[in-house]
Image (tube, rainbow, N blue to C red; front, side, top):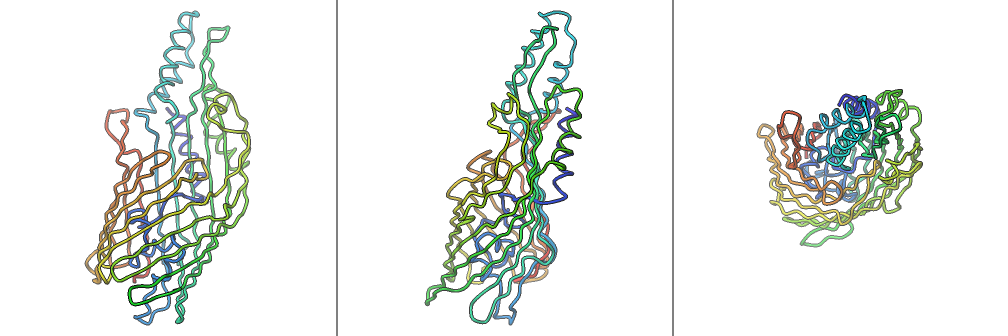
Amino acid sequence: MKKLILVSSSLFSTAVLAAMPVNQPVGSSFTLSSAPNQRALATALANPAAPFLMVNQEDDDNFRFGIVGPLGIGIEMGDVSDLDDQVEDLEDILDATYVDTAAANTGLAEANEILGDIGDSAYVKTSLSMQVPFMPLIYKTDNNAAFTLDASISAVAKGSLLAGTVSVNGSDELETDTSFYAQTATDLKIGFGYSQAMWQNSHGMLIGGAKANLHDISLGRALVELDDEDVDAGDAISDSISDDAVSSTGVGIDLGAVWVSHYYQVGVTFANINEPEFDGAAVTTNTASDDYGITASDKYVMEMQTTIDAAVSTKGKQVTLGLSYDTNAVKDAVGDEYQWAAASLSYYGDSHFLPGIRIGYRQNIAGTELSYASLGLTMFKRLNIDLAVALDTVEDEDGDELPRGGYFSIGYDTAF
């Protein structure tokens, strides 16, 4: 189906120029759980208390910072096998010339059968995220306080096929309001954080933290009917998103705490406790979009999400088993629900020549319910490469099994 490929490429080329609130971890955090790991700088971005753990003052060092990245790219697709061929067959049926009503009714039955197979799972979603160079920057004072400056850009683009109704008109032609629905969301985020030791004894230390995240978010939407021969779907969607996208700013407040002992730690994060709201783009709806609950105008609310985490490790944090769980689901800026449960096992040695290695498993227990297996390497204590694949699969046009999602990240930062 050429239109779907064109729509997806148009969405991605539009989205990667800016950024979006990606409701998934970035960098090595995708492999690791959300539990802070002092050996992995990317894990400082989840819990506002975590930056305190990232600087080793025993080495007379008060700073830690990123250098390049992490840069993360992800893709996800709906649970529909051989989607391209099915939609191409549907287009051929809709565009065909029928000699009489009986032939048109046969085409109608075939079209409805395809739409029944597609259901509401036909979509392609791409995401991109990147830290601004040298971010995050963490400075730890000599009196047990840490200040954090963070800046990132990220983007998401989603193209969906909305299965509508098909009918035969008076000229024995098939008509349908089945439509392409495109969404993009971009975000430039700047964060300011503070964390400090609040209390300690011989067994461990309680660390608290707060962070304010300034978001500049742009949201775009477009809707194009499948049988509209007068409209180029890719051009219409790209123009609508680039010309009619709506931008707004807001501040999200995060709070967090971590109890750290020699061999274990537990933490909690409250993200977006003030639930900032952002303006959405308008779109002209039809019957198909109404059936999917798509309204002419909308707003995006960053809902509050609570995450609990725990980890056990060796005293020097060389080996760590980490766990984290989001206690509630929240929607991202294109309406998809996320609630991650994650587990990971990592080894970070003290040698510059032996690589660190980590493996992880995470599942979105809301929305798509996709699960991922991931593997990451840290080389020279600074270069981080992570790869994840979804464990759910679909079939392509050749009958080969493909994972429904994938994620790749690369970044270079200072070592602990």
